[in-house]
Length: 369
Image 1 (cartoon, rainbow, N blue to C red):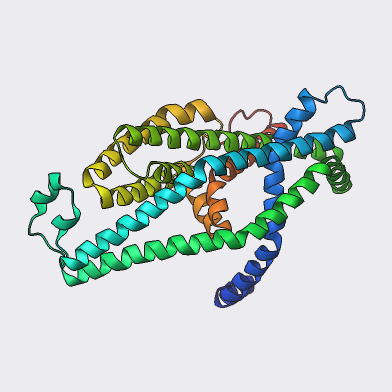
Image 2 (cartoon, rainbow, N blue to C red; image 1 turned 180 degrees about the vertical axis):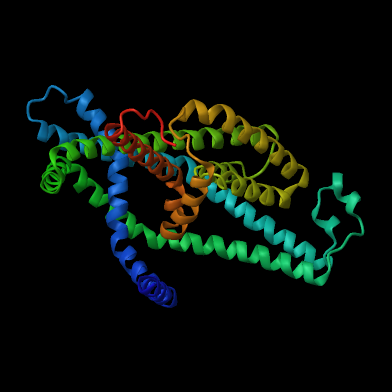
């Protein structure tokens, strides 16, 4: 009874001072964030470095030098890819955003000038259907506030991207050092875990880490490929139907598709809202082929790319999304599926070990009741 009372008091104290813990973890996260992002970038670049090391310098005697040259080539490859993306995507993307801002300004101006008459902002083909339909002052005010907040949100996001450049640069430099010292870091980690673990447990832990590494790499490569394919197909269909903001909406759809469960819904909603400003018919067509794309993605593309690697419980994925989003924001949401897969893998391993131990104690029992 006394233990239960003490636990209840501790739990109450924790809840009553939750803001202090939140501030503490926020401060720790601000310090650790560049280090963690550096590890993530190094983790993503390591397969490229390993490719160069294996294909070009596999027979080189001094593998230490070969590793450093491979890392340099991996960095150059990443920089070239980013440069090509910026040159190819940035100018038309800026043009699309400028056109969107101009369209929003025209819509708001027309609505305010006509006291909310909807027909003034619709194309001639459908404006007659809404002739005489007007928005009330409250609805007009809410619409104005919505689009004003949207534009201010775009501006704030652009500013936050600018302030995050320093963290990205620091993380990228750290990633290069991580990759250069990979062998030394691995040896240090191996010695540390050999000191605290028995050899049998160390071998088992290494097998688990290898499996987790395969899960993460498979997920990252597959998810990026899936998002790219969905974005490209979306862009092709939008171009066929002559829709505006093709590049902007396709990038939004491709990027949001990386987030599990809710990502495609968010991408479809954003695209439909943007197209609604230009032509409601385009917005409807966009939603229709988005449903088709997501159906094909869910039942054909995703199983082809991932196979059975992520056959985890939808409930566990949802819980992972909520926890990951609360702790790490967008990064946590993106890592929700592999985290759920890792938890499932570890849980299956513990259960298998438990059954083996149980059968060793009671070999006559084939199943657990």
